[in-house]
Length: 246
Image 1 (spheres, rainbow, N blue to C red):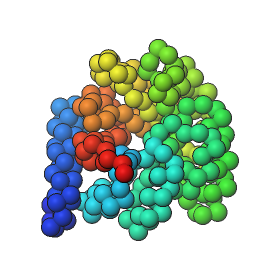
Image 2: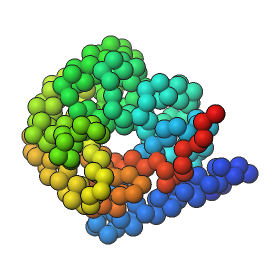
Image 3: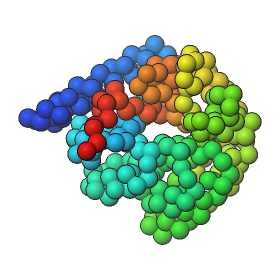
Image 4: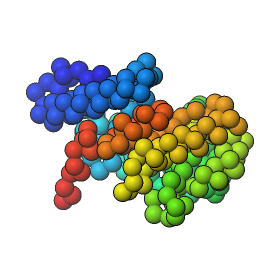
């Protein structure tokens, strides 16, 4: 939970503390309603477009996991904030040519959606992580819950998950964590996350350790928790709107 004393006389830190506390209350309430008050999901604060100074403030408030969706920005922040002891999650669509860079700083990639990316991450993990003594790279299979098989927002079709799972599980330097999805726009998130829970159950039947479900953002975290989310990706409700550029 947050500690308001960490805000000191910094108005932005005080704002972040209040926003973070409000989100923690929502998470606790939703978990209690879902009968899982003793199994709270991991909160990943999505910090894209926000300055490193905000992430340092969040770390002082007890945040341990942060998410970014652009490699260049994430790599810069991870280097600048190396002293904060943060766990970095890559949560955006990832080009194979960026795999080597992401493997240097990320503990997890939440957007693995095609065999070529699995292979690129495996090669990168072997080159960048093993010699550095880093743990295997956690891989979440991004599942498209839309009829267009992820054309617009990324993701593999549910039928493609078993092949991707086997490929990740057999790759040295990678660890199959579970599944990830974004609820389709304009549809009830409960329907989407119930479908994702089904995909997860089938995955776990074949890969019992792959129990993670990365789902739920600012607008739909309650529905995600109801259907078993283990990781939430929350941005705007904690950080506010993205800062103006220039």
